[in-house]
Length: 324
Image 1 (tube, helix red, strand yellow):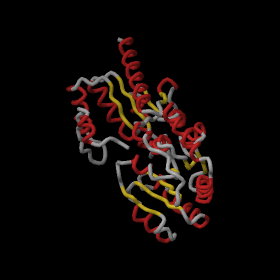
Image 2 (cartoon, helix red, strand yellow):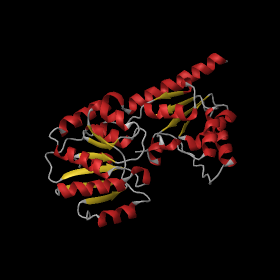
Image 3 (tube, rainbow, N blue to C red):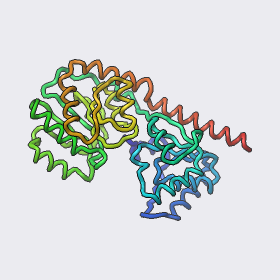
Image 4 (tube, rainbow, N blue to C red):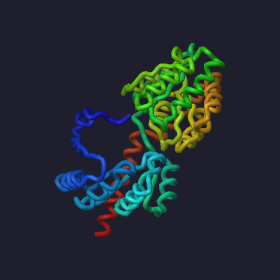
């Protein structure tokens, strides 16, 4: 879950809204450049391809010493031809491009023919404490599946609802909780009604209290068509939940390495339903949850991610000093 404006302010970090309109904005570029000069910024860190050219250009114009760009998912690299060209040109002004998991880094290099030294991988990380406090639920009746995410096409909750309808036909005493909001909510609510799920599916809307939501679940489900390394899955693993997920992006390696759940092909309701039934009927849920929690503790903490980024920034600055 991204930090709120108040959390940034409480940490003493100033936020500067740019109010950029559609299309290229010279005003936005000028504002960024001025801020970099005024604040004597050494490292500019951008996120995802569609805005990297602003950060990279402003960094060079404003005298920053290094530019780092983090790519958060494979789907962000699927752009129109003109956008790919702009991004590739911005890569020439970027010192290092970071994938949030190995498959994002590999896809980035393959799609844009970038030299190996130009890219690296730093795994996403999460704040662990509030999730580690969650205790496993006792044997539940009904069994509760849950998912967290924006209600948008790439998250494919449509397939999740179809799969859950099949699960309910086989095992009526279960429930699906959906946390999140988005453009598809009215359509998905209508679909749930048509599938006869109005009593067993609950749309919870948006909330920042992810730990409280996860504490109510017996298994976490992710139905996405494309992902990088989703924070929601990391959070569910940290909460000790077994995972049912589609085999996309970094999720494959994450779940397989930890041995913490079930994977199935994307956009296949029958396959997802089968995996959900396996989770429901498994007598091994506590063991799977413990494995997932141990994996996140070892490799995906925000402390480790922060230390890795700090080391990268310092290494790039040291390289710049050597070149002078």
